[in-house]
Image (cartoon, rainbow, N blue to C red):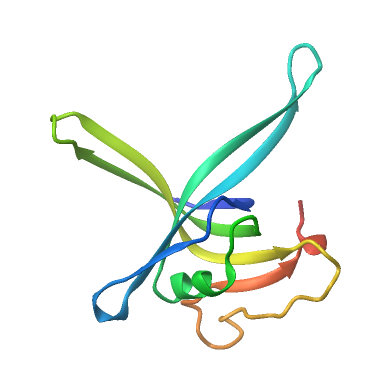
Length: 137
């Protein structure tokens, strides 16, 4: 079974990073993705979806350093569903994306700095900056 998601979008806000016990870190932010299509009358419609993104540990620390509101980022991760009961006993749920790695997309033609931790021997960081001209979509 597979639980894998790929998103290319813009950050809606700077990551909020919290440091927990044992030097653990978690970063949370929103990511906007856009879809453009023609409606029944032929008018161009742009639809924006917002995704709640969560990153942990070294990935969260990297996000704190390089991710800023408005930056374009490619994220690979998995879908997480949380369910709970609120104070009134109503069942609640939310969906978030737990990022496993990310790449900052550089929209100009400058060669990006390669900070891919897999090439540096530390795959837990999962960060690489890339040029949007080389993405396959």
